[in-house]
Each structure stands twice: as C-alpha cells, then as structure tokens.
Image (cartoon, rainbow, N blue to C red):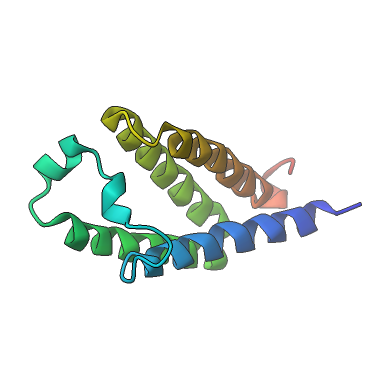
Length: 125
C-alpha cells in the first residue's frame, strides 16, 4: 500500500510536470491548437491575438508547474485556481464542456496535493 508521502510525491510530479508540458506546448501546438479553446467572449476581450495570448498562458503554466515542484502547497493552490478559471471560461463559452469537467476534477486533485503538502507540525495531515 502506498504511503501518504508516496501519494503526495505522485501528485506533486503530476501537477508539476503536466502544466510545464502544457505550457511549453502553447508555443508549438503539437498536442492541441490551444487558441481553439478560447470562448468567443474571451477572444473579443483580448488586447492581442489568441495565439499570442496562449503564449502568455503558456508562461504562466510553466511557472505554476515549477512552483508546484518547488513549493507544492502554494503551487497546488495556484494550479487549482488556474484550472477552475479555465473550466469557467470553457463553460461561459458553451463548448468543450467535457474538458471543463476534467479540469474541475483535476482542480480537486490539486487541492488534495495542497492538503497533503501541509506542514505536519501545523496540524493533522
């Protein structure tokens, strides 16, 4: 049976590496054409082209992933909030609702990582 520490490490690497890979892919679009996931509402509000905006998003995701690897508790909350924002944007656009649900489930996983990463001296883990 896996220990709590092993589970925390698994989540840490998952929520650290996946945002880094997704962020890097915003520059190459090998996994997806990321701009397609922007709602029309968002596209109309952007002060720059969707592809350029997605590169900014990519940098944010890379930083969030690195933060999870270095400071998992803080980084996990950042990733959780980011995933919730992505899901809300998708719901507002009325498209990719399956991805929105997946991102909300991943947000729960990030929350779990944050809780598992609490300082044991500060209370129960």
